[in-house]
Image (cartoon, rainbow, N blue to C red; front, side, top):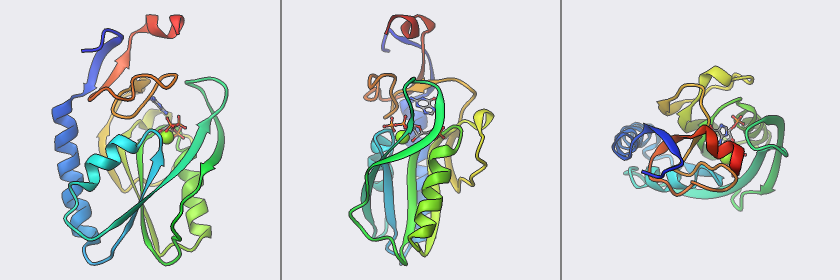
Length: 181
Ligand SMILES: O=P(O)(O)OC[C@H]1O[C@H](OP(=O)(O)OP(=O)(O)O)[C@H](O)[C@@H]1O
Ligand SMILES: Nc1nc2[nH]cnc2c(=O)[nH]1
Ligand SMILES: [Mg+2]
């Protein structure tokens, strides 16, 4: 285990199991609909690539880069900026937004509003992690991998100052790491 990690919240095995379950559910729901899966960069990249391999249907995917956080690294501002937009039109498409984590809900609330305005046929959300304790915007998450307590997590795509995204599990950082980096 990485020496900066205090504890593992979601192991490699837990991740694989959650993805298999989500893949089955989404396969049932979207068979014959050619859905567009939208990965929200950068955090959701690793989850997205694992998830789509569990889908046994025709589908397409695209990427969008948004940033929901301002100057500080662990404090939300509620400001969501589009850094890279989709290349695909979502008009009349069944869209599945793929996120690594829903925390305050600002990012997904804003994205849902945006996709509604672009006339998607349907919009559903799949988030690998759900941290309900911190919710401010009560957006409906249709599919959740794992619910976690109110801790700042890293790994499996999630970062602290761009580090730790490549960890193959989700963990909590040691306190000391925040004060030295
Ligand atoms: O529910 P919220 O409070 O809006 O937080 C969740 C969002 O915050 C993180 O992304 P971030 O903007 O930090 O960028 P990243 O995905 O590139 O790491 C995470 O990947 C979610 O997209
Ligand atoms: N890395 C990381 N990004 C987040 N964005 C919102 N919550 C979190 C979290 O717990 N960890
Ligand atoms: Mg993100």
